Image (tube, rainbow, N blue to C red; front, side, top):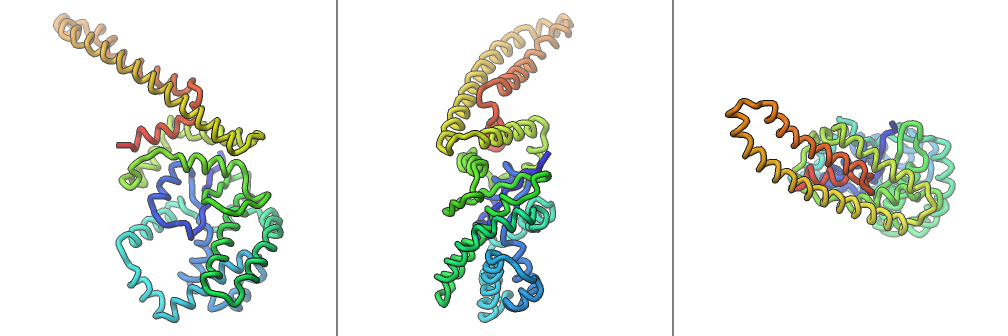
Length: 337
């Protein structure tokens, strides 16, 4: 089955706990801008725009602006003592923790940033033709103005590239979804499926995410029952995204079905609780008699009733309206206090 890849841009990456939440939904996270950052800042591959173009050759205006932003940042830091001094001044436990976790996720291939892994080059180039006039207009406005204007333009280009990738990936291997919010609505870039995934993320179960380890997340998603419920959610999103419903209508259906499912599970759990209470009384009363008389078969029959309740709950989860959202409830039940 295709991997589900969430796409966000480097400028929106602030808190490692956001990545934990996102990896409960997506198989991998693609960070736009991390590739350019690595080449310009970490590897110091280019001194200026000229050396960039000499090594990279022709590139889209959008990509050039992103690189230019990092080159400008590199020059500013070097003029003020270099990156070593910058890191010493900015060093703090939260930043160290974030960087260590990011390195781990890159090693585990849960965070990726190589564009060649995703892109269908033809589609990629076609979409760029559509957005180039927008960038040119912004670029003309920012000429000979402050660094703030340039970095605002870079943020725009990161945002556009996030959406461009989501329309140009290799569909035989991946499903790629941008999940950063965007103020730019451009035909052919923003799609219903992305909006639906963002609806789910914005309504994500409230859990103490900072106390959850990466291994707990990976083990949880690999559980067979949980794995099946993940695909139930993804299938619902895919199907409803193909309908002619507006984002508002999709949200209405989502909230209606989710609430109906939640109520069905609550009612069933109340029935189970009542049944367990009655069963426990019966077992307590009969346990002494059965053990005293060595009626072990009768005892095993009584204990089997507990498994019947578990099976009954699983059946309710599968049959109830809104069962497509059972994964969200499994997250809440697993990780909530």
